[in-house]
Length: 312
Image (tube, rainbow, N blue to C red; front, top):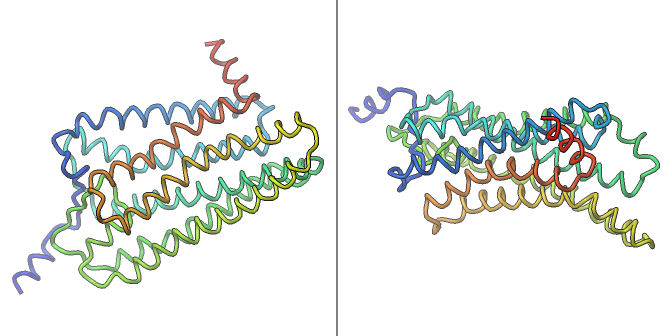
């Protein structure tokens, strides 16, 4: 009975340890983390500013790019302020409500990010396979509707994760060995049966990524077939160049998230600090690389950014 009373007397908070085993190096670890965060924010806000200021860039492809930039900003901002508080000020306590809220935003924005990558693949498919009908098939309104549908899907699929966890009893030991409230890490804090939580979490990951990757694969198989039919080498190269940036962004996003999901569930041999650093880099690296990739590979956007830089 005393043990039960002790468990229920503990405040409704968790303790985020940061990177276990490297607590003494937290201050030094904060330097690359904060650098990635600042560069990513600057790059994505620059992208939003340039596209917003230029009417000539108010096209479906650039609207999708704006959505991608917003998800990158949302993802990093969902966990980096708290992570830096742990690194700089040793402020490790987070309320259960705050933890579940952070978990919801992290996973919902990640699901939305995946939906936008799928929409961008469809955009490239229409641009290459049906160029004469591109303006009629993909209007700005339809792109906005695609974004809204992706948001609704993300909320509906991810919302049960924190709701299911909010009904779980948590043990007295509420130490989460992580920099943020990742779903499976919070599930491990429960004293009750978590089969439903684990199964649903895995199902969401594979439904979101599985369906999106399948549709992306279909889009690119059709694109490849259309490109191979082009006889002109110049047109062939131009068609491939339009897809290069999107392929690079997909590789940086999906490779890291698949690695994180699989190692978190099946990679028990990997040291905890390695897994946590890689999980954090999954959220930090794509927002840094995405504006650079599109800025370098998209001539129209590169020229506009160059003009603003020269003016300043």
